[in-house]
Image (cartoon, rainbow, N blue to C red; front, side, top):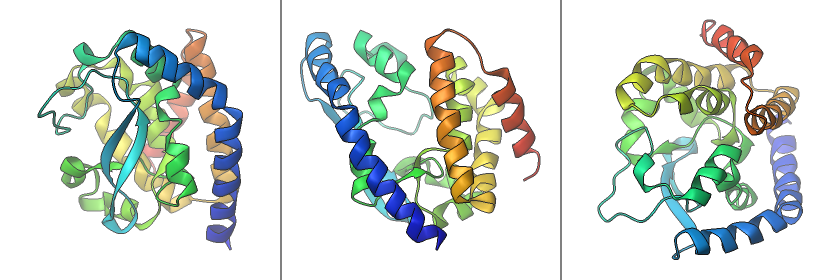
Length: 216
């Protein structure tokens, strides 16, 4: 029953979300063209439920570089144009993933999608459980990466201070998934973005996510 309700909820919310945020899509088209003329969308190769590959939609926030790889877990900061920084800060770049939610390749709430060349890191060992459910737009691990991980552009620091807890939180989500839990995470996501937009840090959320990770 949970899976059926979740899919219906995802579809309705994604459809309403696209309609409701259409002005933001329009502004993104204009400002991306001003910032760095080129393609509007970036299609990332990702691995989702049952290790099936799919194309994840995002607004392009970086200048195109030939031969770019996603082996690194951190974005190439030098390639992010000014509007791209705004989109990343407010998570606007992820709005096109509502299309993935509509077509069923993603859910609103679920483990972070795994990059094809990072599967061994993000879906290995105990984290293989994250491949048993649809990946999502937000989750405990996504919130952890958003509020805390963005402080560490250096990959070595990120791998030491952020990644271990991020991986545990994906496992935590799968083991504790519920409809009301998903609703809470959506509310937390709105709060996290609001805190960031206001230049504040949600320490209470940080502490709670660390607490969750310790139970895995």
